Image (tube, rainbow, N blue to C red):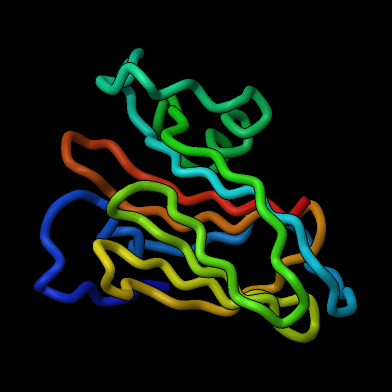
Amino acid sequence: MSFPLPASLPGRCFYAFLAGWVLLARPSTAVAEEIKVEAMLVWGTNEDKSKKPDHQPVDAKTAKKLKKIFTWKNYFQEKHVVTTIANRTTKKIELSSECTVEIRELEGAQVEVQLVGKGEPVSKATKPFTKGEWIVIGGDDRNECAWFVILKRL
């Protein structure tokens, strides 16, 4: 599923995340409850090292799962946040100065996820999201690299 990007959003790939939404888990049902979410901003590249010294490689389990689906050789974590979202509320997670994710807990084990780049809404989708599931929002970056926002339900 692709989403058109506003022409007014030039720059880094935070605005190209709409290249696709991928759900990497099994569907199931659950009742409304407070949910714990891990959010990561990740850079995918074929380079051996990141050009940003504060980037750390993602953990082996995350890298293995990403490599099964995507083509990049290495994945580096820019930011990692663990948070809790109360029943039927929305939580804003700032992953960089340019990238924010808003997650709203919905009825029926679903969440509404909105990606915001430089203060402008970029995409919005409603997805099933039960324990153990991942939602990956990704898009191409310059130099044959990619950026990903990974949401894990803990």
